[in-house]
Image (cartoon, rainbow, N blue to C red; front, top):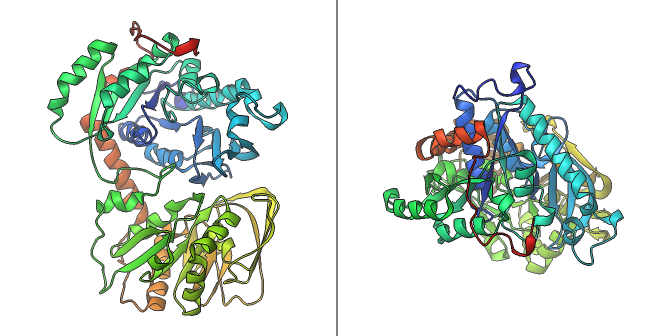
Length: 534
C-alpha cells in the first residue's frame, strides 16, 4: 500500500495519481458495484481515491454542491471513496428523452437535445450544428482533462466504463472505454456476470474483438455473481489465462442487493441490500404498502429507497389500476417526460384510479415530474413541445417549462422537521389558491402531496413524520421505527462492497495495476477488431 500513498497531488507535489478502468462484458455486469467496492476498499486503507465515468447514460442523476448534474452512480461511488461528488467525476451525462434522443449534460450543465445518430455519428447524421459527434476529439479532450485533474488531486482514480468495450459499431467514437484507456494510459479490468452464463466466452470474445492497440490495455478479468464453490472455476480460469495471457483477479460471490444507485432498471436497491430482499417486520401492528407508478422515462426512482428501508414498508412498482387497490400510498415519481407520463397514466386507467383515491382521502405523493402531473395545467414548449396540456387537477399548481434547467440543493423544513433535497427540473411551478398546507416547494391538498425535491425522504425525521401522516390517512396502525438511519444504512451497504473486494479479489494484483499501469508483454488474441476498427 505504501507505493500508492502520496502519489497523488494531495501532498502538494502535483504528481499524477494511479488509475484503473473497470470495464464489463455487458451492461449490468457489475462495473458500478466493483468500482464502488474498490473505492471503498482503498478509502478504508487511507488512500485518497476518486471515481470517474467519462460518459454515462442514465435518468438517475444527482446535483453536486456546486450545482452540477451527474449520474447518481458516480455520486454513490464518491460516497464510497469518502469524497465530495464533483462534475469532474462524470463530465458527460446522457439523459434519454425517447428511444432515439437524449439530453446532453456536459460538465454538469445541459447543452442540448440530440438524436443517438447525431451524438454517436454515422450515415445520415444531422448537420454539425446539431450534433456533438463533430466535436468528438474535443469531448475526449474534455473528459481526459477532467480525469487528469482528478489524478493530480488523488492517489488513485477508479474509472468505470460503459456497456461493453467490444461494441465495435461505436469504437470510432468511444470516449468511455478503450478510447479513454488508450488516451489516459489506463490498465483495464474486465468484469463478467457469471450468473448470466457464458462468462468464459464473454471474456475471450470481448478481448478477441478488440484491436491489438486496445488489447494491450486489457490486463485482467474479474468474475462477478458466482454461486457455489469457487474452486470449481479454477480449471476454467487457468484455461482462460492460457488462451489470453491474462489473469483473473477475483471471483466475487453472488450476494442479494449489492447494487448502488442504478443507472437503469427497476430495483429498489437499498431495501434489497439492507433487508436481503425481505421486508423487516413492522415496528407497529401494520405494514404500509406503497405503489410506485412505473411511468415512462422514470427518473430518480431511487427516491423510494428510503421508504423501502423502513421496517414494515412494502414498495412495489405498478402499471395497472387494480394494483392500487390495496396501496396505502401511491407515488408518482420523477420522469424525463411529464406529458408522456400523463398520457400513459390516462391510457392505462391509472389517472382515474388516482383521482378516485384522492376523492376518498387516500394518500398520493408526487415528486418532480409526478408533482407536475398532479397539477392543473402544464405549458410545455421545451421537453415534449406539446403546448398546453391538462394535468390531473389534484393540486392547485400550474407548470411552465423553462429552457433553463433548475439544478439546486435546497434545505428547508416540513412537517416540523429539517429536510435536505435536490432539484433537477425544467418545469417552473406556480402555486395557486387552494393549497391547504405548504410542502417543501410544493403543497398539500387533502391527502395529496407534491414537491420537486428529490431525496427529501432520506431525511430521517421528515420521513418518519410523513409516514405517520400517511398511516393516519390510510387508517393503518403503522408506526415508523425510531432508529432507522438512512445514511448509516448506506454506509453499511458501501462497506459491504468494500468487503467483497477485500475478501474475494486479488488486492495485491489490483494495487500493482493502479500503481504501475499497463503491464508489459500482454499477448494479442486473434482475430482482433474486424475491418481495421481502431
